[in-house]
Image 1 (cartoon, one colour):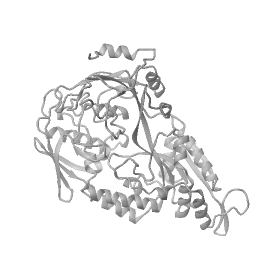
Image 2 (cartoon, one colour):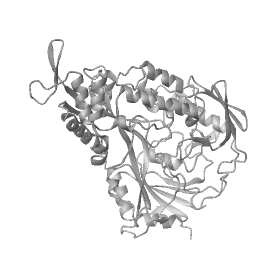
Image 3 (cartoon, helix red, strand yellow):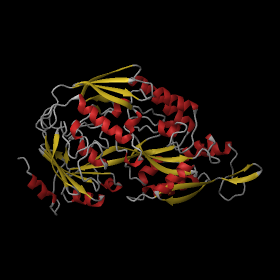
Image 4 (cartoon, one colour):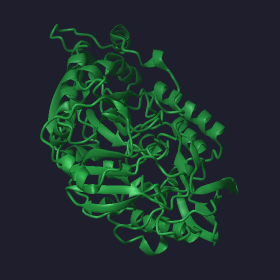
Length: 516
């Protein structure tokens, strides 16, 4: 029998554990997420990561990304490109309506995109929104007729623009309104900030009606309460990035499903600081750091391998495992080749430079994480690993703002930093000369040329080939060290999806088709 709202709310208040088996979802699901900032339903300007997953059930986009990471049609039925990728034309599906029955038109797509572009191009860098990177892709957008959208690109005229067209579409008249209508499988039935968000089936959805009729999303102010609610059966499913979730293993009572995030953890190396401008020194540091050990001991395995900025789970990943293997003997040999040795027996490598002796002592900056101390633990682990090379590492902990200032000024040797990567696979912002996030002062004409080529590739095959060459160049040059991508966990007693690649910002993807 279909659960009513009152029953759902009553279940949320249960204080005793509810025994259950890992079984298929029926017609309703109670989901717990972390949320403290969302006070209005605004899909074009989401403030929290897990809310984006909820919005994905209500709002749809021109293009979606499939299990293989490839762009596929959604609201757009087809597309084509002309002018060497400078113009992309999208044809909308017929008979798609918003949840009130109003037809979707090209004008709605255009208005949604222009709203995002205006925000993304605003002067306040902190108010450019979740979809701000579209300003690098889309120069202009217009409606040729009710079913045809024409996109003019910026100087980037490449295959990657398809990923930028995954923004939600709302009615043209509601782009700046809370709780706009959507075309997705569910509608927002009720919302109480800091309490719950209730979704029910959209009877006007253009695809087959979902089996799951209701989704109750319970909002928690911290991860501890969220996980406790899952332990005591107050929610069927919990989304969390807390390493505490690693204690849950799949079994008859629960499923623990790892999902990929876009958060890349790195060790930055300042090429302008001696001796990190030397390639062999950078290679030695890379060979001496065991990222797998950090993942296991510090992050409790909640990571996804990444030797380069391309995740090992990506369709674009190029396997160069032998290049990135932990190898302490190789690291020692590389430093010896550069003339580093411990001449005075103090367990710190030294070398004569400009007629004076220099010790191999490096500063490592790490910023405090209010959620947990995994990054500080990582810093200490790296210091211990480099100590085996007789490299002395002095760790300084600071605030995020202080470390950002150091990075921008180039006043560091080593720094632990994370990057929220964009949905478009393109790391040029951190690897091309002069770009704002190229904190390492890495300069390579070959790498810049490769990214310039990537941004002219308008088909999948050429794009993948160039991305492979970029990863090879990264391995050769060691601009910085990629440790891994963070992973999150879906803890659930009810299986609600069969999608193979569960990704951050799409954690409910597949529930609309489950049971068909």
